[in-house]
Image 1 (cartoon, rainbow, N blue to C red):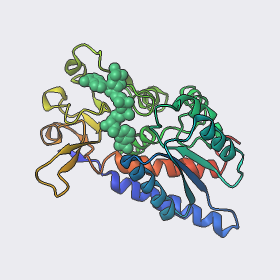
Image 2 (image 1 turned 120 degrees about the vertical axis):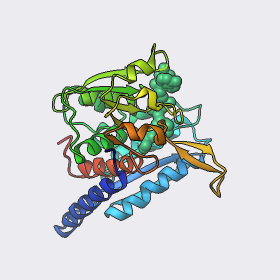
Image 3 (image 1 turned 90 degrees about the vertical axis):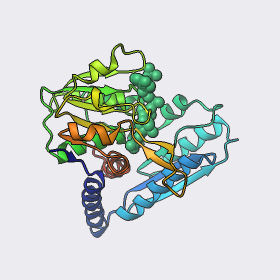
Length: 292
Ligand code: NAP
């Protein structure tokens, strides 16, 4: 029988845990954790993501602020803002919402963030620490996937995990993490140059689809009894919704689900876990858990 992994439920449990911890901190006279989001330009999707993060900050009791800049901001002006946030002791963690306008180097911006405040976990120092198995801020989406596997007590040891996608924010970190001691998967990473992708995916006990191609993974690509984690979120046209679009994952859910032991839906699977994992990283920053 297929079990549908309920990301909303897991995120709600984590939200309650974080909120309780914040309430305790405040009761002890400590300051609540404080997260800043830097938003450049007025891209609709970025506005929505940042709005959701700000709302969640309110729900768990964090202080938060969105610092908005026009897309005409120069790289140097943005780097100056990052230096100010690095130095501001009232700010525990901050994120720079990506993508940035083309005239600004995302790499230079990410490298300018103090790793101790890098709650997105994108700074190379956090990447290096994560790969080395040291305490680190782990990017929110892979961290959210690990929380789902843990919550549902899904066996990973010795399992073959096939990850489709090798981005810095999802594919590569989740592949690395699941290969580490404690998770103990044997991991294969697939990308756009992989030969016989369907054949490789069929060997996966756990399949993580993070390629951004709606309904790419079909039933014939999935082994009977596999665990399927669908990271993809793409807006596709729909005649059945008022808005004229719906969200689609990278997995053809209707035909793949009956073959799986566990599967995440879209929406309601990995998505809700990403924001809550960012909240947890911010709490860890406020408690100086990663960098003493
Ligand atoms: P990305 O940076 O565009 O990377 C996509 C990866 O998929 C690349 O490594 C690419 O290979 C690979 N790929 C593309 N087409 C492929 C194909 N036909 N066969 C095999 N591999 C293919 O994407 P991302 O940022 O990782 O995001 C992936 C998806 O997850 C998107 O839909 C995004 O919206 C979603 N996402 C969701 C959350 C969430 O909270 N749920 C968070 C982040 C991202 P190459 O490297 O060879 O080009």
